[in-house]
Amino acid sequence: MIKNMRKNYRWLAIITVGLACSLQPDRAFSQTFDEYMEAARTAYESYDFTEAARHMANAKKKMDSGDEIERAMVNSLQRQIDLSKSFINRIEKLEILDSISVPKEMFFKAYRLPASEGYLEGPEALPYKINEVEYVFTNEEGDFKMWAQPDTTRFYNIAESIRLTDGTWSKPAMAPLSLGGGKNAEFPFMMADGVTLYYASDGDGSIGGYDIFVATRDPQTGEYLQPQNIGMPYNSPFDDYLLAIDELNGVGWWATDRNLLDDSLTVYLFKVNETRTNYDPDEEDADIADLALISDFRSTQDPEEDYSELLETIKNISTLKRKRVDFHFPLSGGRVYTTLDDFQTAGGKGAMKRYLDAERKLDTKLDQLSALRHECHDNPSASLKDRIRSVETDVEKERENLRILKNDVYREEGN
Image (tube, rainbow, N blue to C red):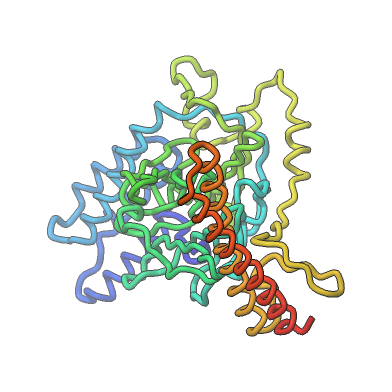
């Protein structure tokens, strides 16, 4: 999770080199190779891809061809540089409304989303006791959750669970490993459509650290199509994660550590484009690298537009979770239970489950009776009338049973 994420490639290189030396005590890494790699990484993080390529060429000359660790370091950085060069000329043109510095821990609490978009919560929202989970996404209805947890390889993978009709939660279902690109997949945010998933991954397709990806789920099969890196300016050579969309107000949020704020992250608030429009590198006054890095978020704003009303609306969004309502069951003292979780006794909860089952049976019988009466109205017959009388008798029996079961609920719950 956040506290375990690497700040950037430089620290990974130091750790990797240290590990390699400990494993190969009789062999020291070439300092010149390390210097070229460090210079290439520094240039890359400044979006100076030409300079990064020059240092990479020198690093390759100094690389020991038989050293798998050095070769992996070179290949990883080269892949990131090549991918970034493909993104730099198609940077999405965003209007960034605000920039907030927040502590890394529970950074998602800074996002203000209406209930219609779901809830960004901590591990207390988990339906199970699972270690090493810090973030949970819950939908508006409160019957669907997503989070990330480590698998047997110690990489994080996205899990999900749905609330069953009896109030319990299904066994966590794991997303395909392809979402993580061979490494981690974390910070899921499922759009209200139930098919569009945004998440962060540091696997294949990342330009450095964690990048934000989008994957579309087939509503029929539940399978995800090939995930896509959403590109710049959302993603950078640093860590970028948790993109959340507020369709109601037409804004979005994402977090990044590209500004190197020690134990803090930068959270950006932006206007969501109805259709993606990219900057034209030949027509922009600002340096294209500055637009990708977001050197000054205010420069992305329209000077003719007043954002104050929209910002005030977002500021006043209540992030309090709405109480789930599955039914309305009044008890003494003005109490009204709306979920099975409201019950204080196991007997009361069990009686309520039986009552709800009987209520569903009664509804089924009433639907059947209504259909028979319509059919008899259009095509009357003796057999239909007999069936109607039979179902009417069943309805009265179900109603009487429902009254008995309701009293059981009152008795068991100590009403």
